[in-house]
Image (cartoon, rainbow, N blue to C red):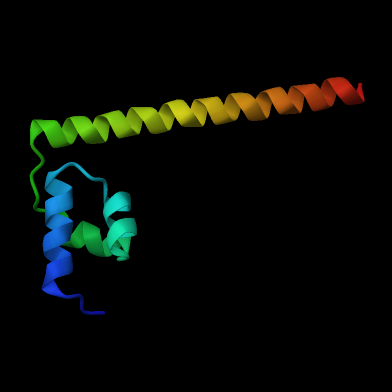
Length: 82
């Protein structure tokens, strides 16, 4: 599929601002693999790298919290049964 050049330019702008490939693909409604191919040569400055690092840490924190909630629910269910 061929995309307008404006979409590719928007993707490059978003990437230089530190947006992840997932975010870019979601916003521009393109495949993640397409975004990856378009943006593989984009160098990220320190600010952009920090934004991605913070989002990654937040994702890890949320995953830990979700796992804890599921563990607690499972434990409560087991305690209820026994």
